[in-house]
Length: 301
Ligand code: ADP
Ligand code: MG
Image 1 (cartoon, rainbow, N blue to C red):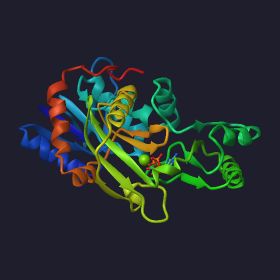
Image 2: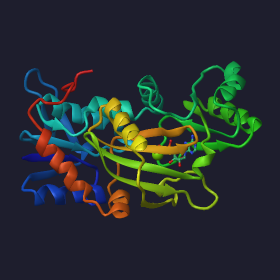
Image 3: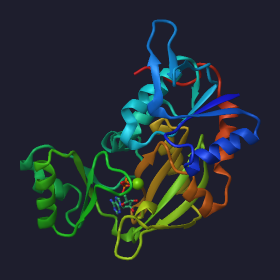
Image 4: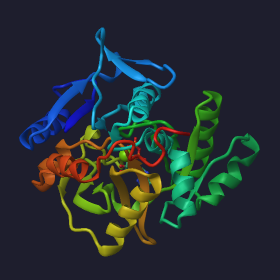
């Protein structure tokens, strides 16, 4: 097959591993810098151009789109979908997953366990909003943050009120969430491909920190998931419409709760913590599922 990887940097671990796995399995693979792809949105013959040349069609596209370029990246991916390439994750699902609020609303409708979460616009509602999520301590989260940036713990109601006031003043969109204290600064990353959790790790925040992101100095280890955690992760991925995803869970005293579903989950942490060849599993998934115009939405909507 002819496979394109949309990635800003060939040297990133995840990109390198995907190239390696695809090549090893006999595919032709090209890494395209997402921001250097441009599109001819011509009637009936959409095409993607790259460094002055029109690209030959691809059988499949693996999007590795960073949060800072979601809008452009989704447009490039959609263009490939229009041309019939099989997207490992569809552009619609990618955009959906990048909005924490939209994601939580979709997961809530599906009855998937979540931390109590509220969202409000008016300052009049602040006190009630804090009550809705069970009072302080609570977490205030920017809607489009990543790598733990924009996730703040408010220990008291007074601190929460001030924090909310500041975020409003800055015109930042944020949600307010129950703080899952019993998780003890640990969360679980379940790597889901298709209908299966193929690898899972526990990430523990460093001393004095509640955010377990590896980018914030968290450490990863192998973990065995309960059947409930597994099915929660798989259902969350399915509801988001993602074929390959990293589902982040917390172990709360009301069962597993989903924090977010990542559409371009990193491979380094999970492969190192579990020793699994996740890259090859992604390529095998493509081999099984890629067909022309086989994505659910074909870039519509
Ligand atoms: P980001 O997209 O920036 O990674 P997350 O929502 O995943 O944002 O939050 C970052 C980290 O903060 C999580 O991995 C988790 O360790 C911690 N965290 C987030 N929300 C909560 C919560 N409601 N209760 C306890 N810990 C949380
Ligand atoms: Mg996260």
